[in-house]
Image (cartoon, rainbow, N blue to C red; front, top):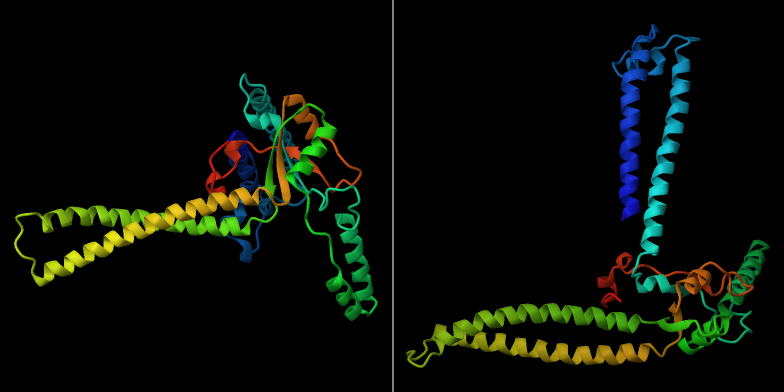
Length: 321
């Protein structure tokens, strides 16, 4: 947020600077340039442009000088804004009580298999295979290339949370605090979560209808009420339907919540696609986020973890950590 505000402030300053010098210096120079415009270009806005200045006039030096001035002032404003953003960032990182994100890194692009023999499933091998297939296609053997690519079986994603723990415990002995994994395939969890949210919304509406209908029923079925006429009977039947619908969505929500918890627990045992590794010191986290961990630069990519405020937690269906 600080960077966005500083950027907006920088744009406002540069725009104000350009507008002031443009109207105070450039426009008067162009307007009094003494040039003659052709009839087809004799509009008012052309009179404010360089086309109004006579050819080989010394007034063109003003435009060149203003270009260099604008550039230098823009660089100076940008440098000042960059320094302020860096100072704010350093102050935030070195604050007295840093958040857990200062001790954590995000790990992505893990190998498909936990063993060191992952050449077949590595990105470089897949790239080489597709390159050879493309070359075969360019040489006119498109059918054979398509068949080879279709029949190629890559290793399945089988690395698990325990493998990530082993890898980082070997790389940083005694420095790993916790590891939170992100399963590779959670389509079923996401689908159930969407259905659960929809059911919760239906439950809220049914609860509201039930509360309104419950008040109406208290009046309709009070002890001293006379015998119900046909319209009241229909209203009573409608109230019973509202009550049944509320109970239905209530029981369904409870069951779906149980199913969701069970499915999330089971999903945590699946192969992982990414992980958040939390270290015991900020120094180790900073080091891990800036070095390569394997000879293959496309595997085990580590970057600083996102701050909680940079994540849309509502889209993930979980609370802030």
